[in-house]
Amino acid sequence: MYITNNETRPLKGSETIIFLLLGLFFNGLGNGLAVATNMGSAAWTAAATNLQSFTAIPKGYFLFTFGILAALTLIALTKQISWPHLLGNLIFVSCFSYLVNFSSQIFAPVIDAPLWLRIIIDLISIVMVGTGVSITMRVNVITHPLDDLVLYTRFKYLHGNVFLAQVINFTLPILMSLLIWYISGTIKSVNLGTLISFFGQGIVIGWADTHMIKHLTFRKHF
Image: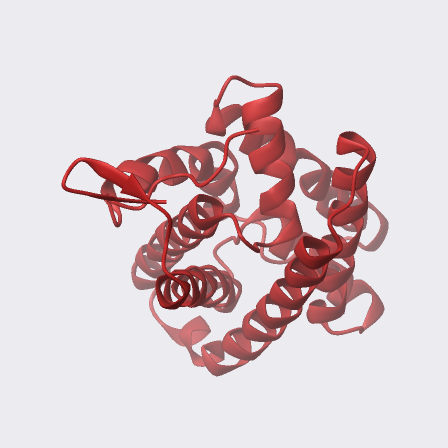
């Protein structure tokens, strides 16, 4: 929905596409940039990166699998399925997984930057991810299934508390990364940025809801 002259109207088709692409761009690029800094990325991306290190399978495949599992979990919780919405979400997660994989390779030289600069870049990437998630959540036509799951739990069970919804969402991938660390003795993409993302990503999303593209509001509450 979009607010103009104090009136709320549905998004036009062109606006929906533009906002979805913008959200995907910020989310995918931000995650890829965080991986490249090795200063800590969002929890699910960090888990995929550690699984890649442990199995030698590209992280994009794990990100796609996470999306599939999140979609199935949401279907189980809601006890209903919208095939067009599910298909759209799977297309979104496919594009997202490719963009993260591609951008993390493009930004790989960032690892040679000074520590202070990598920290700044990592913090910027967290804001980019939160902004991207906020945009796609508000459009709520198609989104990453994990974000769809957060959106559902946020309004269905947590009275709109995005901070708590995001912390719950990040707990499982953090445990996955720690388990791989315990088994292999190696951990990647878990650092200062991961800690900030764990406790701060929900805050960033809440901030972006009201400060980034202010006239864009939630299409549907659960």
